[in-house]
Every structure is written in C-alpha cells, then in structure tokens.
Image: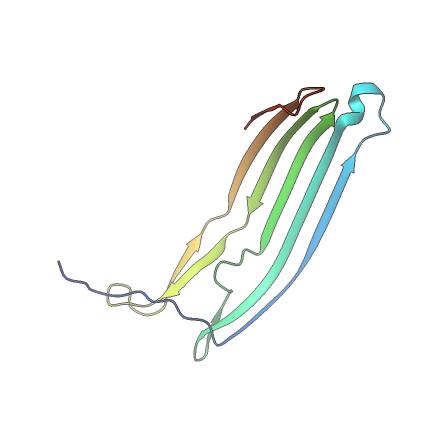
Length: 134
C-alpha cells in the first residue's frame, strides 16, 4: 500500500467573523390550568466569515456555519417536564486541502442539516426519584 497524499491541519494566517444572535424564551403562565405549563424557545445565529487559506485565496472560515437555528416547544408543570426540539445548521465548509490525489485547492463542504430531539422527565412527588426518556 502506498500513500498518495497527506493531510495536515494548520491555522489560517488571517480571519474575520461577524454575526448576530437572536433569542426568545416564553412560558405561557397566563394560560388557564394545565395549559400554563406550555412554552416555546427559539434561537437563531447568523454569521459571516472570511479566512485567508493561502496567499491571495480567501474563503469562509472552516467549520463556521452561516446560520444555526433552534426551536423548542416545552411543558413544565406538576413534576412533568417535556421538550420537543429542532435544530437546523446551514451548510458549512469543513476543510480546505491539497494533496497529490486532490490537486489544487480542494474544498470539503457539509450540506445543511436538521435534527430533532425529544425528552420527558417525570418527578415523583415526595421522593427524589425521577424517570426520563429521550
């Protein structure tokens, strides 16, 4: 077996990142009875980046997505905590490389992705026991 190229990590000589993050969290305690346990959490981060990868060559900063958003619906009342969440990560540059098998400036980009998560925790009154599922 012969190696036709090698990979190495190195820091970029110059880079810049700017962005903004927005967040909202609300439990609807003004609703009547059991409905007052419902709530929503939303978060969005938007960034712009530039990095010099070689003399005269710039690109987005590796592993820095331009957009990340989170949305969660939750319920917290009477010992029950439940959450359903979605996370979306925009496409991002994973790495920049060059080797004998990848001539020139090879860029590896991850596509945008969306994932979900759910969790329920029940606390039993008068004890320190709890039950959790995801």
